[in-house]
Length: 239
Ligand SMILES: COc1ccccc1CNc1ccc(C(N)=O)cn1
Image 1 (cartoon, rainbow, N blue to C red):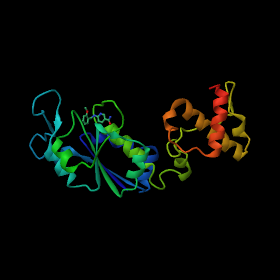
Image 2 (cartoon, rainbow, N blue to C red):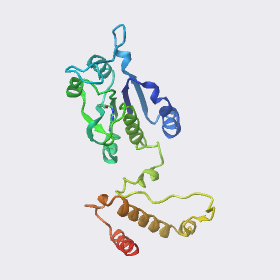
Image 3 (cartoon, helix red, strand yellow):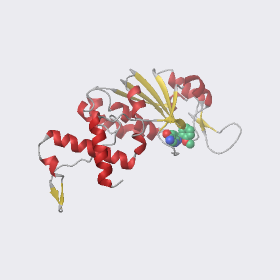
């Protein structure tokens, strides 16, 4: 899979590409992340990539010419990160991870010229209802979420336990030491009894989802075991 990211600030992506899981995946050529500097496609003397908005008002808009030219050099579905987009979520990430190639335009300032959106953008996507100085962090977040779904980037077992993979929030995690400052790891996790551990984890996921994101339970098919555990949880919570 190849992810192109069009941006005015390519340096923002150097750490993202060199560190940790994404860095290792790129080293292993499991995927490709191609950062495209929009300014490379400004052919005027001053390399002007943005300009004042027609109709007046504050802020700057990214000019159409450099974007159209940059888009000529990439392929795949074109995503534009903007507060006006559809909400990004794990389901959309899973869909996008099936693509051979995608291109993400990181908007900046007040955004990009609408003629680019109308003629080239396939999907406007927002990572949440808040405004940032640019679309680079949303582009990085989306690329990270999509990249970790590419086979080989993380162990398959890991993402199958992803919070949003089974529709529930994740269970609590512990590692050594078994006791720290008097705080103990739940006994069941030290028991080596895999069925009990699996049940404990499912119950904790259900409890967290019930308490923090009850909306995720609405319309979710509950297995017989999940129904039993949820009834236990409600009794224990006295609700
Ligand atoms: C006023 O900013 C813009 C206006 C239009 C486009 C891009 C920007 C750049 N900023 C962004 C981008 C995305 C998100 C998000 N929620 O995904 C938040 N801010």
